[in-house]
Image 1 (cartoon, rainbow, N blue to C red):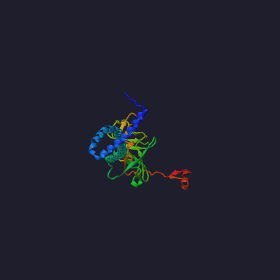
Image 2 (cartoon, helix red, strand yellow):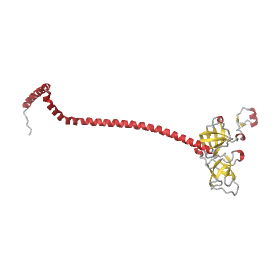
Image 3 (cartoon, rainbow, N blue to C red):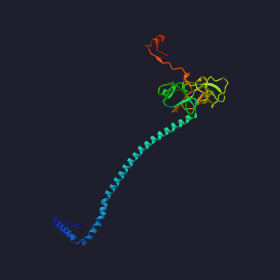
Image 4 (tube, one colour):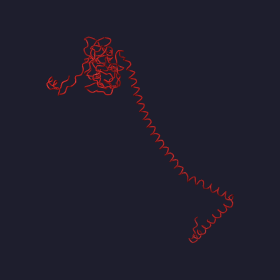
Length: 299
C-alpha cells in the first residue's frame, strides 16, 4: 500500500531531509577524523556492499578488454600468416632453383655416359632456343666460334645422338636435329647388321630408308651410327625401332629432343669435309653482276 502525502508536506519533508543529510555527512567526516577505529566497520561494510555492484559494472569493461585482446591477437596472427606466406614463397623459389640445378647436374652427369674418343675435342653448351615448328626441327645453343664450335660437329647427350651443328656464329650455334626434314644419318641396325639411312621428316620418329629387301627388322632393335659417309663416327647410339606398321620402319630416338637442356658438341674432324656456306653477293659487284646476269648470287 502506497502512502501519498500532500504536496505541501512533501515539499516540507524535502526541505528538511537535505539539511539533515548534509549535517550527517559533516558529522561522519568529523568523527572519521577523530577516530578511524569507530568508522572502520562502516567502511568495510560499505565496501562489501559496493563490491558486487562494482563487479557488475566492471564486467562490460572486462569483456571489452578481452575482445580487444582477441582482436589484437587476430591482427598479429594475420601479420604472422602474411610473413610466413612471403617466406614460403621465397622458399618455393629457392626450391625451384634447387630442382633446376639438380636437373642440370643430372643432365651433365648423363653426358658422361657417351664419352668421345680421347683424340677428339668437345664443348658442353646450354640450349637457349628451339625451333620446333612444322618445317624446321632445330635448337640453338650458347656456344660458337669463340668456344671452338664448328659446322659438322656431332651433338650428343647422355642418351645418344640428337643431330649435328649446321650454323655457327660467334657466340651461338644452331643444331639440326635428327628429326628434321633435311637430316640424313647413316646407321646400322644391331643384331641384323643391316645398314640404312635414318631420314627425318619433321615428325617425332624418323624413318629408315634403303633397307635391303628380305631383311627382318624387329621392334626394339637398337640403331647406331654406321660411320659411313664420313658424317659421324660408328657406334653412336641413336634410338630403337618403334613401329613397323607403315611403309618404312620408324625409330624412337633415345634422347627426348623436346626436353634437352644441355648438349655436348663433339669435334670428330668433320668440319673440313663440309663445304663452306656461300655468302650472298649484293648488287654493285661488277664481276658478280656479269657472272649472274645482274641477279644476286652466292660465292
